[in-house]
Length: 252
Image (cartoon, rainbow, N blue to C red; front, side, top):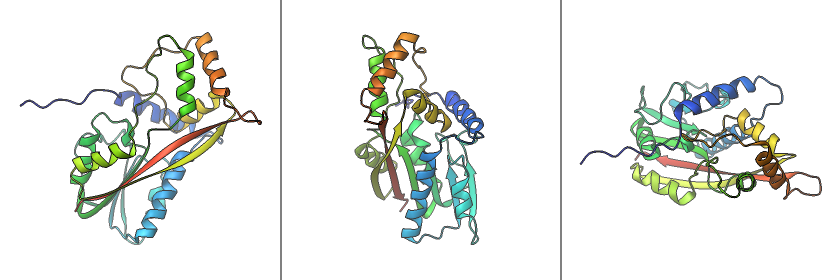
């Protein structure tokens, strides 16, 4: 039977362009980077807890370079790849690796099962994969604001996200022998919808849908702003949650 291509939900071209703009924005002193910083710290904690001493490591998606810098030393060979130089939906070159880490990279690929299989194939026999991604349940206030902006016919503006159960099933489908999937919540307060959107752009997390909706008109944007602030606390700040999934899997 002929193979069936996965649906094209995301635009790789738009994703790369957004990340390149984010790198430019990161030159600003107050640019947001709390999501990638939290993911890096979590991975380092896990590696210390597991007492891993990998010799060949591939880091995908850490545009800060912090994780590679922290791991560098003790004879560790570090390879770094960003989404502009590595297509996760294609075989990964230069393997095998003892450890592959992917940070906020796999939640916006069209063929996620294929990407996970390529990661597994690039691991050594005792290799480990650790991946962190933004998961279902994130940005509830932003989602509500987008619906309020266009109540009659809302356009697609938010990405579909993976939940815990789906992540476990995907790892099994990619033939990993052991899987651990756990989630945590990072809560951040915002003074406005515009500040949240700016933070997302700083971190390369803007809309990269293959068929994005048109730009919001002035009236729709104002409805979105008001809806976002409707849950503000006594300090006029809105608490937004980012649900982060971490996938830890062994090849064998």
